[in-house]
Length: 208
Image (cartoon, rainbow, N blue to C red; front, side, top):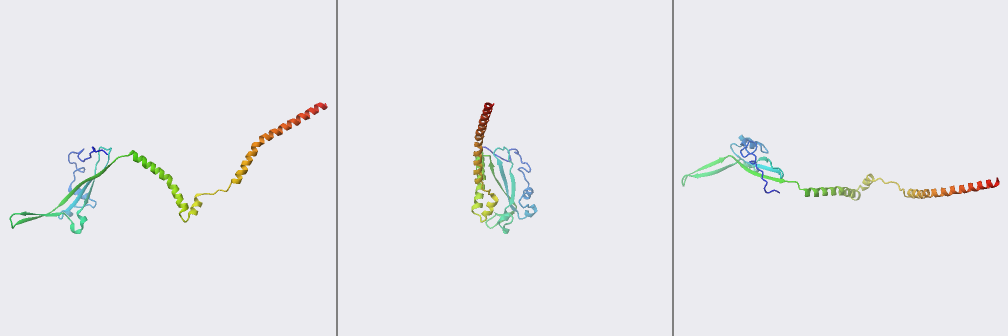
């Protein structure tokens, strides 16, 4: 994503800084998943893993890791508590000194991941989600209506069947057609009435 990007605890703090890149043994033991007291491991020792976990956005210049601590010598069973080793120092062919050393051993690891926003993937996920949102109701209805044993009850609650209005609609269309013809018929009737009035007036004038 950016091969030149580097995050480090020494970038802004080149010198050791308490709580940032400098910890005492007691602080590290207290940060474990199950806090450990120094007095508990002072004699037998212990193996401690310290992880610096980075979770950074590629656009950020500054990123601070999360420190995770765990005790790992207890993971191998009750017989493996503590940390110790032996070494020998030969002083002659028939003599040697054997040293048994107990103490704390710290294993330091740094792991992490970087992330950034991908516009192409964002558009693809948004379009896919929108498509699934439209398909999901259709699939749910099909399963409820065709697969489930109580599909009739679901049908009755989802759909409301209206009466058949086909005959009423046919009558309504016929009535509209008749109403469209009405103005022409009324005009003819008015014309006939005027003709009769004219004839009556002409007869009345002749009689006078």
